[in-house]
Image 1 (tube, protein in one colour):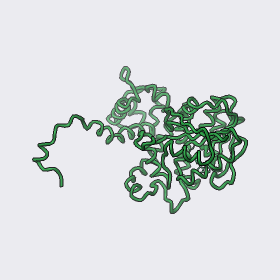
Image 2 (cartoon, rainbow, N blue to C red):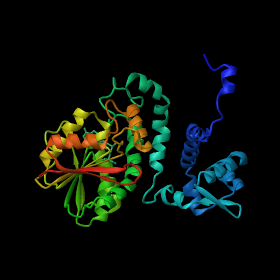
Image 3 (cartoon, protein in one colour):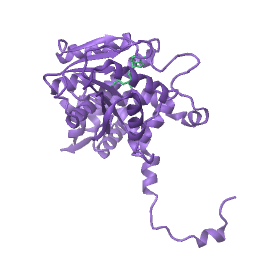
Image 4 (tube, protein in one colour):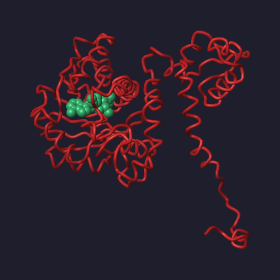
Length: 351
Ligand SMILES: C[S@@+](CC[C@H](N)C(=O)[O-])C[C@H]1O[C@@H](n2cnc3c(N)ncnc32)[C@H](O)[C@@H]1O
């Protein structure tokens, strides 16, 4: 139908601008600039050799026009600064985007670029069908399959990149000094175990994950020099009747959002059974607020679970509190913090 000219003329002058919409609508320009620079390993290169556009063009064997544009784009995004005609990394790029650095974030960007971007392009399909778009549930049982080479190549490196700094946030916000032995259920690359055991010298940890994943964790643990204190336990947290015993704290980081409520309640029940009285379970996630109005990282991660999983989504503190208390956990509390892959932890104790 639309608006007639007469109606249009009578609409009041807005006192707000569409600039926020421009920022939202072009967010993928920024993402693609960042991910292209990471694919070229630009920040690793600039760390040792700041460059001007002709030098970048020569290094990449490309023309000067795109070389200048990518450098200007990265500078505009706060990733590079310019001094004496040459571009160099800002502290943000230097700390997180140089390959090999402790908190390298590029692995997560690489997965977003090469795996999730295409899945998000099919978001309308996911919304219509309530099915994931990054894998086919008619051909695979779950997202986590060793036979999926694309997954094997990117997913756990990406999780490591995201989780290593998130673990630092969790370790600062939650006092693990009272615990001795951590079981990391679905621990992936072992990022949380490496970071938490580095921070808490009296803590040791077990990474419990699928057999093809614990090999990846073992490599990361060896690289960190923690092989004595962080070990792996291959298993399947759905198929195994019991979880490994002898731990006083269990971590569930980015596990619950992969599954539906019934599956999550089953995981919590087995966590409860594996703990001795006094033990705790820590759920670390991007928590959606109880009103379900945000915050944006959690609300958008939840949509990411629509394109990646069959029944997962990001849950609220109230939902976790109810499931924990129904399972038998007591003294449930929520601790908020700010990090990349989590904004809070929900903790419950077995009394
Ligand atoms: C989103 S990742 C989170 C990894 C890690 N907790 C972190 O935060 O970095 C989910 C993890 O659950 C593991 N997982 C999925 N299904 C599993 C199962 N049935 N048994 C054990 N681990 C499983 C995956 O292999 C993967 O490492």
